[in-house]
Length: 146
Image (tube, rainbow, N blue to C red; front, side, top):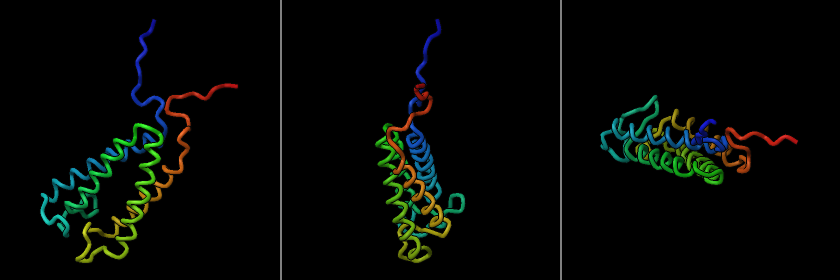
């Protein structure tokens, strides 16, 4: 007789897995941003960049919040959809803000144009996650045969 082992992500939907992955990525990137900036110039242009994206401590704090939210909301399909709406709203707003604020001295997030493009892509991706069917089959689930 074989011992059955429960796979931790078995039954998770693709929006949940995407939410989990994005949550982990944003938590790591936000934490790394704090290390780079050293906590100086909280709302200013700290001059630090991560992969071409400028960061300041406030921007890093937003990334950590987005990341931890993704980790928490990934547990259920409905939570993943809520995270998708959050991404679409927050990053869509950041994109519009960045259109006017990038490079200006009143830019609280220290944005540049690569940030704006990334914010637009994540906002659209959030919309895709939000539009997903919360009752879709999960990873490892087999469709019932008729």
